[in-house]
Image (cartoon, rainbow, N blue to C red; front, top):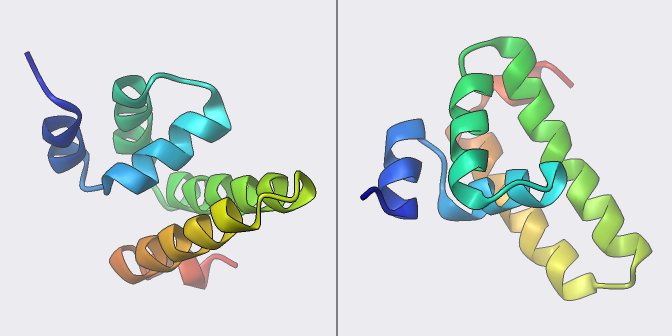
Length: 90
């Protein structure tokens, strides 16, 4: 049986990035890892992943969950560091 960490290692996303995809897409985390792996295959997909995390930050702020918004901002920063091409698309 594959663990969440195995799935994250396979798709080159952190557990927090996968959790953000799961949150945005309302998916179990293992399914979110598969979705993330698929989206990482194209520039448009990387752009979508970046927007998923940005959207999650916005939702957290709207709900007054500043701690979660701050956490997601750190996740977004890590995603941008790991996938700098996401910055060229914005």
